[in-house]
Length: 201
Image (tube, rainbow, N blue to C red; front, side, top):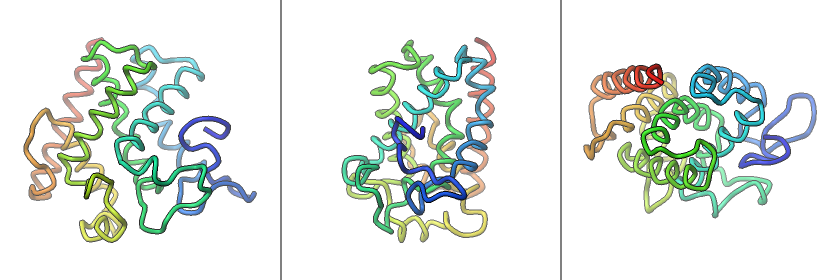
């Protein structure tokens, strides 16, 4: 992630001037990755290179689906203050969806790291964002809209993660307009379903 991949040059490393402000720190990224290593291993992705490639592909597909990838990216060296799709809280929340990414590719019978897998994930994540009400004019919400939805304050990260997981349901119902309790319930159901399906492999 430091030399190649969708976050190259952006990850902040404590103690040295490296990375881009308002993007993810190395410690935060490591912690989020540790949480999904068992899911990767259970799906047969056990080598360090394989895990790095798969996670880079997932992150790249997430940024592609957001509609902001080509507007602002690592090559710019900085991001507009209104862009939250690269922020740590958003990236870490997305990484909790890695088990659902694995299950989506398994259902589609795609190799885990491939062009077809990248396209499948980007298309699927676009639908997740649409279902969750996270897109406006084809792009991931600006910071002001994100804040209005309650994702920046206390408990906001948990609500955002629940919204993402709720939107993974195979449904066309707009999750973003559901009551919080219903969103949390649907998110829990989807997490359980995905883990149960992954365990069958």
